[in-house]
Image (tube, rainbow, N blue to C red; front, side, top):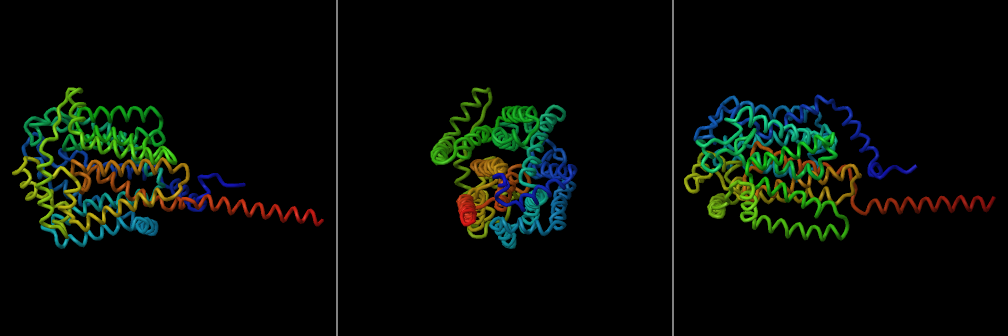
Length: 460
């Protein structure tokens, strides 16, 4: 009997994946979810000992919080060492991303502040180790389901923090962000834009792919409602844009088939370009209609200066996350009263230089090619769509914020999940066209056997 389409790709590998997933305990899955939750940077103000009403939230980190952050990467690293054969196999599949990590590590010797950049890069490696561990120990769908339940729990915790710890969950009028963001929610995080981006990405992905990941359906619907509430109360323009663009990408580009996918891709490209170019007008109008206020003024001036900063270290960069150092933060504050470049691409050029940034770009393109040039089992198509949307959100968010490549945060986590997860799908599929050739060959063999049987009967 012919195998179902979901198992014809590679029966042995699919069986191994199911057995490995079944062998992982619920407690271990909960542990991976808890680790990913920590990597989003929750309760930073509370745990770091910072005064949420003070004027200096940017560099007030307690030694205890720093020690915890430095130790956490050792947990997934220990799991990777224990399960090193599978971990190395996964790392080989995503070798372009591994090349980016290696080059970034080598360039640390040329950093403007070597110690600071090494510590920051170690924090980012914690995110990478955790994601490698998740995809090493769990099947792709189980990994996405673990992430989805973590997101659902985070929505609840954000709202509980607002009501139970309003001093930390709501932006005050006297802190460094208070002048323009007083009264707006920041929930578990240190800024309302972090909360907005977290919920915008989560809503945009879960609204089209989460029904299969979050069970029962009521949990899925409640999670979407809570995400929208957080976006609205945070008055996050980027959150609104992501919540609107990601479903459009899915229904315009990922969901259609054949020529409709090409047409949808063109429509999505035009729509995304228009939204990104006109977002200042569109988002301001939406927020004013909701009784909120938001301004994007001053971005172009900041970007112009950021390009000048990037030109100071064009080859090697200033060092991983050096733009978040006290010196660079002070330079941006002195000029524009903001702490960073408000653009992850310019931030990457400042920190990584042109060569390393190009390697990262090649790794991103390679992940898309690896996942979309192969036919996957039907049950993994939703996983591929979700991972692609996470990658799109990671790329789009970088147009006016810098969180995408930070050591700790939801966006670095989403980016690592997307890149490593898409490369990991390579082992579950085969190149497009191979199924048709295999089917044709099987039909030819069947016809040949039938002819031989008929000839035998005739001779008898």
